[in-house]
Image (tube, rainbow, N blue to C red; front, top):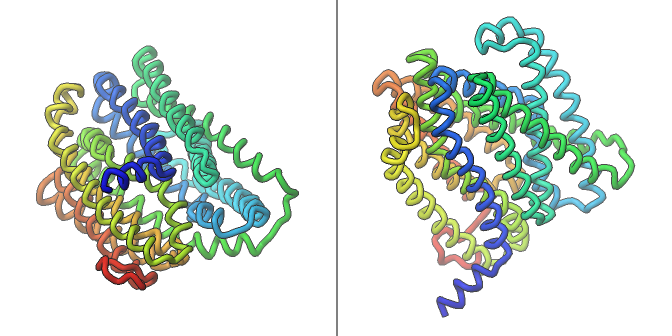
Length: 429
């Protein structure tokens, strides 16, 4: 009987789709892993820190372009009719392009400060602006492919971008000795190229019907998205503020070493994000049915999933030191001590995603905003205090504690907006 149940799970489309996409993401991560032993012998810790700080800064800029409305695409693909969704998508893309122009003009106003802090000329700023825009359309295309259950195409898309970035990095950094500029340029070209492909995917869907400017769609997207700016900004603070604190309180080189350890610890997040992207449409569909038996299964799976990713994170943390001491350049060996803290942090993020789905489904983005702001403020305080206490290791510890707080508060909030049988006994929940 148990064997039949396991076989049924393996044959389920959710498992197949998740396994396929997870394999593609893990293969992409493997490319990054293969690149690190080479790149850490050609880039200094300071080079790595510069690239990381630039990525974090422009990720924040990207939030003000998307206005937090991108998360509404997956939800409304399920909720709206096909005709309504295409109209919704058309108006969202117009809004995003308008925001992009405004954000770029604002960045130009502050280009002298950006040049001093991030060593970026006007040309670099323009290229990175295209990089951010490319990343947005990559994200949109990926969400559409998953919603259409075209997981294989999405997997090839994700792997292709990672492979392009790796090959360009090898050529520019190793063959041409371009240092941090070569690594950054490789990331830019791959994002812009695949962003163009993503835009074509989005455009092909939009052209299925004539464009009609509909302010109601824009207002709906902004009502959902504006609170999400604070939420997403808080998320970027949790992801990137540690690098800025380390750069200013210790030095940029130490931020580079930390970033390498952070990248290895994030390995668990690739599994988490790939599964969540496949799980979300399935979850929204099943939760809409409000079937007591299905709700019980969802709760059981949530508990099993939470335990599994925490164990996986601990395993990554244990294996990291001997592996990194072999594969990394000598200047980056100290990065291994940060891995377990970051891996467990992203395991807690995976747990958060399982509970946040209830808030997304009920359109309670204001609650998510509040939780994110609280967590971000906690992260700032914890990061500063723990770096003072434990040095750079304190930044990793602060990240872990913050994500634990983040997931626990989100679980509590989810129980208040959507009743589920968390005790595994209440079948009428």
